[in-house]
Structure formats: C-alpha cells, structure tokens
Length: 445
Image (cartoon, rainbow, N blue to C red; front, side, top):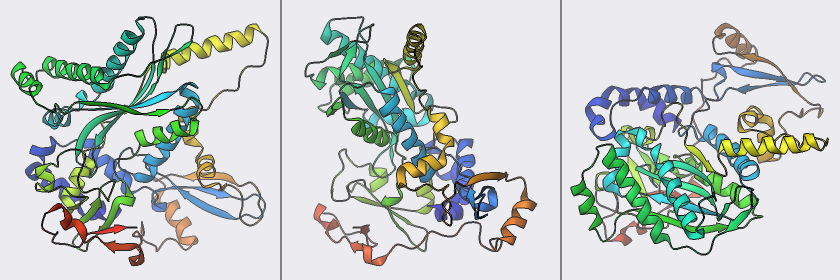
C-alpha cells in the first residue's frame, strides 16, 4: 500500500480532474494532506521520541505516527481498539444489545458520495427510526434506548457503499434508569420507517423528486434494509468490544491485499474469499458485470477507490444517542458524584476517556501484545521518554540517526514480499461461469 501511494499518488493527483472528477466528485484537499502524513508515518527521519533506561542507558527511538483515519491501517486500528474498549466498558450499560445495520439502495448512494454532508444525517435518521418504534412497541413516550452508530462508506472491495452499523440496547431506559426489555421485533416496520425518512431527507434537499420515489416504491426489492439479527447478552463485554471494533474498522485491510505487481497493479480480495457472489449486485463499472471474490486494480484506480473513504476534517464517524449520548452520560456522572459527596464516601475512580487513552501508546501495546515496551530488555528497569525530536529539527535528526548508524538507511524500507509458501492459486474462479481472469489470482491461506 505504501509503495503504491508513494509511487503513483502525484500522478493520480495530476490526472484527477480529467479521469476521476466526474465519478468521485471535486478534489478534496484533505486527501493530499492525509496521504502525505501517511507516507511519513513511522519514519524516523520525520521525528521521534527517545526512550532511555536510567540504569543501563539502553536507548531506542519511537517514530511518530500520522494518526490518520480511514487510510493508515496501523493508526486507524489503534483508534478503533481504544474507542471499542471505551464503548464496551464505559459507555454501554450491562444490558442486552443488538447490532443494527442500516443500508440504502445503490440508486441513491451517489448523492451521498457527491454531498458528504448527507452522510452525517444518516445516524440521526437511524436513531429516530429506532426511538419511534421502541416507544411504539412499549406504548410509552418517556423511555429512551441507547444507541451508538458508526458511519461506513466502503464495501467489500473498496467501492462506495454508505451504510450504518449501530450498537443498540435491546430495550429502553426509563427516566430513573430502569431497563425495560423488548419483545421479539419484526424488521419490516424498521425498514419501512427507515425508507421513508431517507426519502424525506433527499426530497427536502432537492436531490430527488416524487416521481423517483413512486418508481422506487414499486420495486420488488427496494434496496433499503435494516438487520438486527445479532444479539449480545448483558454480560458479554468482550462481545460488545469485538462488535465495536468491527463497526470502527478501517476501510482498507492489509490482510486482503494479496500482492502488488511490478506494473503497480493491486490484487485485492473480498472480505470472504470463498464467496463467489456478493450480498448485493456487483457494480458494472467496477467489476465489468462479473461477480467475483477479488479485484485487480490499476494503481491510479486503486488510489481513487481508497481515498474516497477519507472523511472530511472534524467530521465524526461515530455518534452517541439517547441513554448513551454525551449529555445523558454527563448528567448521570454528576448525579453519581453528588451522591457520593453527600454520603461522604470515596469518589468512584475516574474512567479513562478515549483522548487520554490515545496518549498511552505503551499501555495499548501491552494490552494487545502482552509485552510492556517500557521495560528495559537488558536490566528490566522501567524506561522513560527523555525527549521528543520534532520534524522541524532536521539537523538534530540527521546527527542522531547518523551517529546511530541509521542515517544512510532509506526513509522507509519497502514491505517484505509475501511468502510464496503461503500463497495458493485460485483456479476455481471459472465456477461462476465466467472466463478466467487474465492474471493469476492469489489468496493467502
């Protein structure tokens, strides 16, 4: 991935207006800034922190990360892990939950591609749908469910597919915090109400007219769907955390990038490589009318598909509603603190916010890999960060890296080639009654 962006991004930027603007919309400045920061991610020549053992003076460097969303697999994964743990342990109550998935038909997706502000409206519409039906089922207007919605814009092979994943309490909360479970529900009312709200949004914004609405209402399969088959028990904290990680995952997966050819072509497989057909009809412009479990991208086309999922600056992809909203959690925290103060008891320990947790890179590595990077490998003494060398300090960076024998190394070493022993040829692509691809298709076991 780094090789493709490093070698072809400037060419992609040069030909964007001519080749890609009609399909992907006007050039967004956030794309250039995000890619440039990704290319410098983990590069010691772009600055680093010095970590030293106070006992034996052993030292190592920690390169700065780019912290870019939806492009850098490493930085996005760190963000997803931190937020998922925060959601599962600090936000969600100990009650049953369901995973909701809200989708819209392909006919309407282009409006959300060209007008990114519409993406921010989808979580609000999904919340209104859940709230209205939950209240109608219980016949109470004073109850409120808890909901955490995540916006996703990507499909199996990076094509534009705006939809929502949501973690919703399988019941509602009364004003005093009492949880009321829900009986088994039918997805059809959710789908009908969700459909109506999306149509109303696009009609209000002038994107569609009533004639198109009437036409789409006559379709046998509307393309609107609300699925909530996945249910998690009240004590399944690990399940909520895994589901939150899935909701927050990066659009691009390094595990699904099979190889990059000498010509720069990218072989990228679907999330489920054994499937011969996708859950939805394949995009003719993207697949040439063929349903398959992989895609061979031209390098510029790959960059176009990849960068369209970069969100606009300061636009949240995760929204909290109802019992899980920031305002509701703040009120409960104040009431809890006041109760402890009145009882003259010790206050409850403060929970770590995602912003605080992001700073603790060593704690996150220890949590994931079960190894503390701040323990000296020589004498087991606790190491300390002694300085930060900023990117603007070029002379100092060069002197330090040269002194340590790192100055002559390239800014970033190329990723290792895949092990041929772990690759197998997929020869059964012809099973979909289509001609075999022009190039061999490889997939990792």
